[in-house]
Length: 227
Image (cartoon, rainbow, N blue to C red; front, side, top):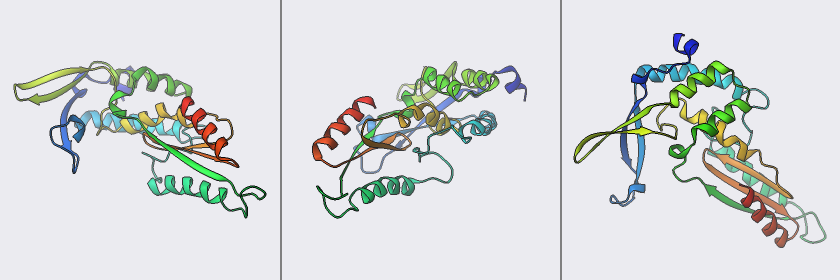
């Protein structure tokens, strides 16, 4: 409990060793063909788990994370996200006629954040945690968790180290919940028209329903500009 009381995440636990996992069917000479995974200190991951469990008390309460986020959460899956989208379309076309009845058009645009976890800004994460009214002692330990992180990796010329200035480590315990907290603001955007957003980690689907195709196009373009 001393680390939580002082708000200090030990420096020796903040080294992350980079391992690159090849993506199936991707060309081996392209950087995007590999998924970066961080091997982390075991003691540090225990402290991460303790911190994560306390954070969940704030993300799971009413007003915590948006119900539109289906990724990286217990009891939720891609099936739930897909069903959310499909049910919107099913309801839209359930009427009898397009122009004089209740039947409507439904369209979807999907968006994905490239290099999502590695590009998450720490100041945005901390600001999002404050909006959840996370207590100061947790903000201190997470701020310390971010500071002075070191990435160790091996090249053809030998071992090297690099100071990390943004992102959440893939393979960490805290990474998923910190990403969801930061990304939550996007899932809470208010759109004009009958538009909803469904998220699964860094993938989102913007779904629009309207009586006319021109209205669908207008609403989707406006929503994408907001996102």
